[in-house]
Amino acid sequence: MLHHFSTLQVIILAAGKGTRMASNTPKVLHKVLGKSMLEHVLHTVEDLQPESVCLVAGHGINDVKAHIGEPENLFWAEQKEQLGTGHAVLQAESLPSIADLVLVVCGDTPLLTSETLASLIKQHQSSKATVSVLSAIVDNPQGYGRIVRDEDGSVLAIVEEKDASAEQRAIKEVSSGIFCVNRDALFTYLHQVGNDNAQQEYYLPDILPLALADDKRVQATIMEHSDEMLGINDRSQLAQAETIMQQRILQEWQSKGVTIEQADTVRIEASVNIGMDCTIKAGTQLLGSTHLGDGCTVGPYAVLQNSWLADDITVAPFSHLEETSIGDEAVVGPFARLRPGARLDDKVKIGNFVEVKKAVIGQGSKVNHLSYIGDTIMGEDCNIGAGTITCNYDGANKHQTMIGNGVFVGSDTKLVAPVQVGSGATIGAGSIITKQVQQDGLTLSARPEQRHVKHWVRPKKGS
Image (tube, rainbow, N blue to C red; front, side, top):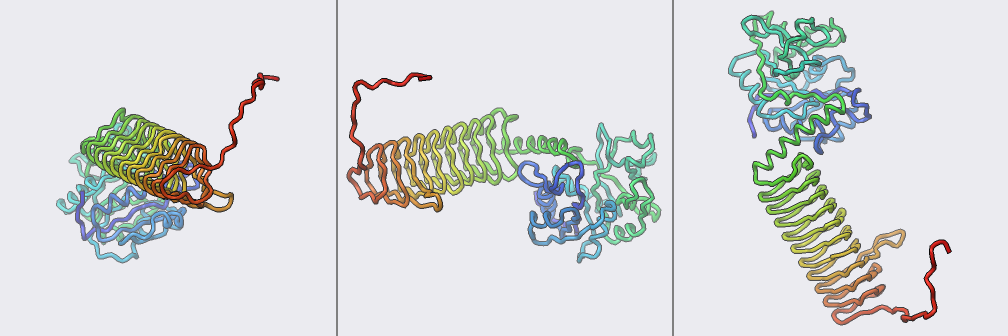
């Protein structure tokens, strides 16, 4: 859902190394259902339509920049030393902005929704608060800063776990690390924050007591779904986030008219798009930017990656499609492999143990069994027999096979590229085609004479 906060600047904190991930990849670039954590967060805050977004990076900043690119209204700040969240936010102070409010979010919280953030901002504005924090009630608060309130429920402080007393550690309302703050006040208070704590870091939450000392309003808005604030620090939490997000995605597609059989065995990544009345069967994986039109049936145990399918297509069990485009009413598989650059027109049939790579197959054509079609342009209504191979590689270069309309190729034929087959031609089984095949008629390549050796004895094992 889109919102519109034109007076809002968003600051995303993404400078941490993520030591517990045990990886050379910056933490925020680890993926959750096909998209990096940072991409999920960016997509969420973009739904708020803020005045600008500032990304504070540090460890692996060049990798982060290469991954994200240069979206419109995105500014970069570098935190060269990781000295805490308050220090990180300060790196954005000099960036141009005319916003009245700043929303600070963490780059490792991929489960956040724009609805939750919009609710925080609206409550901040309506209550005329100076500082607002998004909080949650959790059963296990370990690892989170605790929200300390007075007897009237007013927020007094956020205490980091390492600095908390035993009594404070028992508090179950915790900070998400997400703040909405009036911009002028934010940077004024951050310059006053010290690092007298166990980590000797400058904590963003330490602006709260400074605001309270100035009689400014401080509030905590409790989020409805606490799992949204899950921050990813290790591979176990990464897997936990995937499980939660996958459940959301499955429920969303089910609500839009998609049947998902044995949903706990299915993987549908975040950038996938599915039409109405599709059936996704057990064990199927829809990955990357895969698109399914209406009325498709996929699986069981099919894998589709970055592929585009039109309407009423059947992808039978154990088929693997990658960077493939398929027209209406086509049938693929079972056990078919469509590699990058395969394009099937309407009503094409690709059968079992057929591999297609960088090839266009025209409307109504069939490649039913045990064949390889690579670097080929094939016309309409062709019938390619079992065991046919386009020999497209000479050991150094790839060459193209051109096949006209209405061609019938007999079983176990080898088409040695570069070669052309005219429309209407029939090629006899077992042929090795090295020259142009004329239109229509029957073409046979030379075959050795069939002989029978009367007294020949089949060898026995071990002899």
